[in-house]
Length: 217
Image 1 (spheres, rainbow, N blue to C red):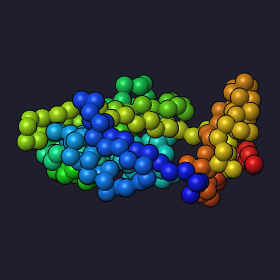
Image 2 (cartoon, rainbow, N blue to C red):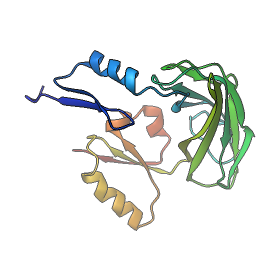
Image 3 (tube, rainbow, N blue to C red):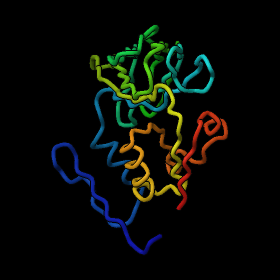
């Protein structure tokens, strides 16, 4: 739509050129990728983490709360069938206690997603404060050629600052950069809402804050 013609190439893992053409043909690209760049084992990515319940029902883990959540993972479209899938949830940061950390998943076919057969659960220490927690999800699975394991990472905000900074025009690195630097300089904690990624701020989210700084265009 901008008066340019794409030129696509596909090179396999051995450095051999497998495809070279001007213009865009999704079917041709998919065919050559499936033929020459297949993965002979399952490989997962984290699709979604959904909080099912927390003590005050605001969808965010707060100090003193017990949080129950589900995890959805997907298998690469270029991979193979995964069986006996298990995920081990861990967090090494102070303030997080794992209550239910190991969950089994159903078999996951290539290009398919699955949610755990039970839910994960953790408790936040009452004195934890506001911080970002780094969660790790170590998975293992069997396939026709053996077994595979790896670790997926996810960051979760714990607690809620009193101030919400809203970048309403959706253009990061313009006026919100000045506001972020100013608030950091005076040590004023805040949460940042990026409209380009998260869309419109829900009313319930706004009501959860004592103060909102709204940045226009």
